Length: 407
View 1 (cartoon, rainbow, N blue to C red):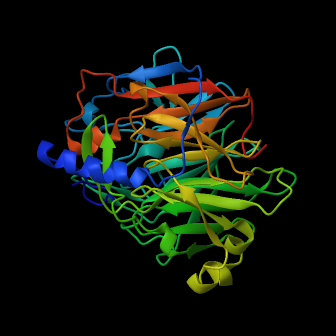
View 2 (view 1 turned 30 degrees about the horizontal axis):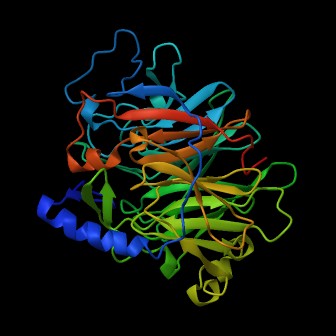
């Protein structure tokens, strides 16, 4: 089990796999039907056995500063021709947690600088899991504040840090209070942005996979609060992941995936979310989250939460496009599913599958109509069975002919 991380993966014995598979297959018989579409074309943009970094010339790497087997790729966002990725500091030896990929060498370049990756400096990044990019060319970056398992473990307050993508300068920092993102305990996982008609960000919505809840940040008021509902908790039997015939436990992984209705929707806009250790997909009215009095009262919140449907297996990341289609990964199927969120019935369609989609983590949509995704075998990483001689991390894209939910 990784310290300070809300997920613990344990591979089960072969004798127990058959029993769990039987329960799993019985359960999925009652899930939403999954339509198999024609396999959609996709391309692998980058792939790595282990990730490596573009270190400054002449830098001497001290013992333990860079441990390749401890570096895993998760977050992903695209801006113009740049591909941004995160490498969370779940263990020692992660030199840079927010990076841009060098297209010529496939090396990760610390972004916006190596100084911003300094451990123990609470003005720099400590543990970045996810980010989002707005239409003004600014990156909204989540920092949990806690870099786990270091001899000199960093313990800083959780923050939302906004950077200008042209200059790399920090333009806004919001430090979450203890009651919103508990110090050293939170795991701020994913973020979506709400904007006004001019594309200016007004609210940010953030999942906390360890201390279950959705954190709301009001940009103009520079104030944040936490919403909780029982739908954000991990589910019974949801911690048993069946991937390529092996079964893993993913323990205490609460609300994780998050997506928001597209900007142009004429009906009431919604927030979609799901626990990682679970099968159900939920939605909530955005206006309720924007009202602190409603968002912080579970009884009031209960009136605006709806069960959308039950997925065929667990999901990490998800995203909505400009046409209202929700894309999400399915762990057991090792594929991407899509569902039109304007449909009354939850009947997702499987559009791509394959071994390269083992643990679909994060999605992004570029300006040319491509859906991008990171896959990282996170089940094996936490289980201690990741083979550094195999290809483990990939960035893949497929054409969907639509823009982002922010367009």
